[in-house]
Image (cartoon, rainbow, N blue to C red; front, top):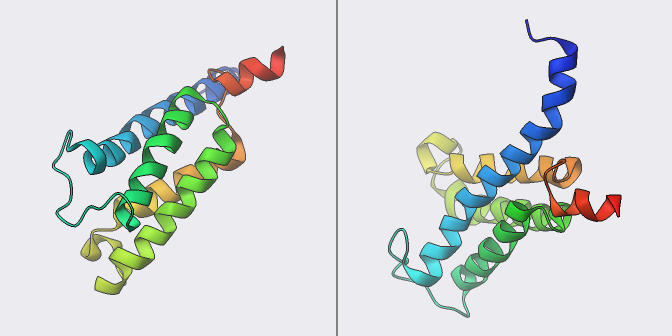
Length: 132
C-alpha cells in the first residue's frame, strides 16, 4: 500500500510528469503535419485547411503544455481539438474507438481536459509565475 504522505508528496510531481510526456507526444502530431517528422505529412495536408489548423494547434498547445505555460488554456484548446477530430474523422467510421482508430484522440481529449482543470503541477512555468 502506498502511504498517504508518499501520495501527497508525489501527486503534484506526477501531474507535471504526465503533462510533459503528453505534451511531447502531442507535439509529434503537429510536427508530422507541418514538417513531415517523425512521420510523413498527410497527403491531404494544406496549411490553410483543417489539417493546417489542427497542426498549428498541436504545435503551439503542445509546446505550452510541455513547458507548463498557460497550461489550462492550452490544454482546454487541445482537448477541444481532439474532440472535434474524433467526431469528424473517427466516429463516422464506427461507434467503437478501437475499431475507428480514435482511441488516441479520446485519450488525448480527456487527459487534456484533466490538465485544463488540474493545471500544470509544481514543475511548470505557471507554478513559478504564481510564486513570484
